[in-house]
Amino acid sequence: MASKQVLVMKKFPKDRNMRTGKYCAQAAHAAMGALLSLGRMDPDLQHFVISTENTFVYEWLVGRFTKVVVYVETDAELEEIYVKAREADVAAALITDAGLTEFNGVPTLTAVGVGPDDAEKVNAITGNLPLF
Image 1 (cartoon, rainbow, N blue to C red):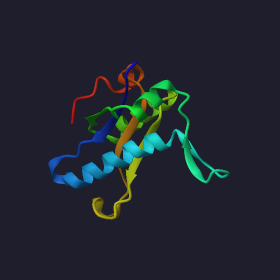
Image 2 (image 1 turned 30 degrees about the vertical axis):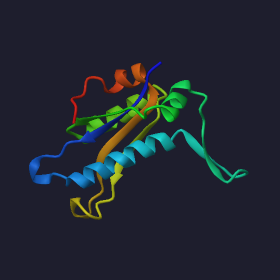
Image 3 (image 1 turned 120 degrees about the vertical axis):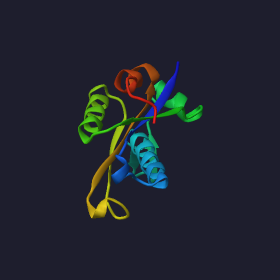
Image 4 (image 1 turned 135 degrees about the vertical axis):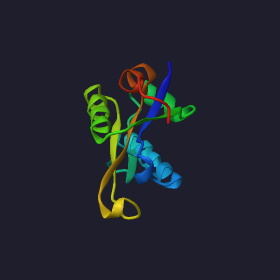
């Protein structure tokens, strides 16, 4: 079995480019957001609980945290990836930057985290995208 997570970044044109650190932060938000979408807060235990019934999620959590970073160029492409992931019952998080440090205060879509899940399911959603 192979499990993986794919981070889909929106690649901005040179005149609107994000700083490298901002790209890294947005990728981290996408990775964490997708993972946390698999869990819930357990009020009795007062802990965050992630179900590991999906063996691919369990393998990813105790394994190598395999990640691949790819890119798209438009908001529509980010939204389409997110919808495809949710329709396939794959963990996903669509990230919108608040615009506090970049984008002149305008909230801006920046990334989608897809997975962790079965690498074949994730590849069916993101496998055609170019590496970032």
